[in-house]
Length: 69
Image 1 (cartoon, rainbow, N blue to C red):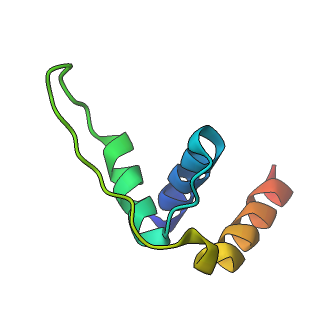
Image 2: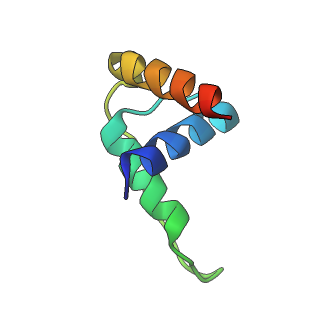
C-alpha cells in the first residue's frame, strides 16, 4: 500500500462516515479496498488512533492533489 492509497482511503472514510482515521488505520483501509471478498466473508477492520494528530499530512496531501488536477 502506498502512502497515496492510504490517504485516499482516509479521505473516503472521512467523506462517507465523518471519521478522520490515523494514518496507520488508513493503510489498513487501503488494503481492504484492494481485496476482493465473497458475500459470505466476514471482515473486521479496526480504526484506531486519532486522525487529528495527522492533520498537517492530510492538508498537505489535499493541497498537492488538488493543485495537480
